[in-house]
Length: 317
Image 1 (cartoon, rainbow, N blue to C red):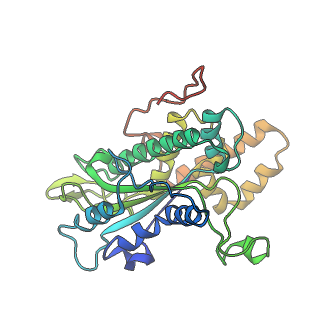
Image 2 (image 1 turned 120 degrees about the vertical axis):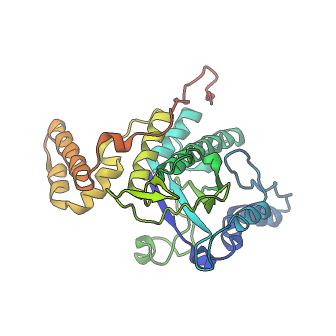
């Protein structure tokens, strides 16, 4: 699972309206409409956005809700943030196999009903992740995604950029659709909570060991983005019965980049037991460096698994 949190250059650092970002996120709907009209077909209705309670939300409502939820924010403050939840190829295949009971390499292979089931799981994951997002700020009384103002949009395609190695090596053209499973979830997240009582910025670096107060009450300062990623992986594993390999963990991936020598040892390990010991050691190194203990990685919510195969091969959600 890869998570990116950022302000958007398409919206002037998110200091103004969310119109440009919301419009950009409808690009797959626009492409489908253009292709249908080109083939003389009637376009299907746009899928719209989702939030913590509803689906099929129109773009204008998204823009209005985000743009007016800005009480107490200054001219130079970001009014919203762009969050991208990107399940790995392995995670996507796991979800898809649970629906179809077969290996899927592209979402175009899905039937309409299977596609709906897939997006239902993705929305479920996004909503559960937003519960963790809310609680991860450590603010008293902020515990649920229902207290946030956010809108999500699922995309199933990515397009090559000129900076990609595949483009540089001439294997694919810039702007060409990338092959394989490319599903990801975009979230437009307001800087303010729904009651407009709290500023909640995921870009603020976490300050450990400080006795901070907000309006006289103890509070956590900042937002540990890597720890949030670790929690969303745990959420995914528990919710969808995913057996995550040690080398898939956020901790492993980050620490491997910082300790290439140990990663090389892992690659050269001649038996599985030794390899696993080294992988666990790499994760422990990451935890020690970041002063993490198991308590830090616990989820704020009880997660019940939902991927239980039924006789008719559908999912119990």
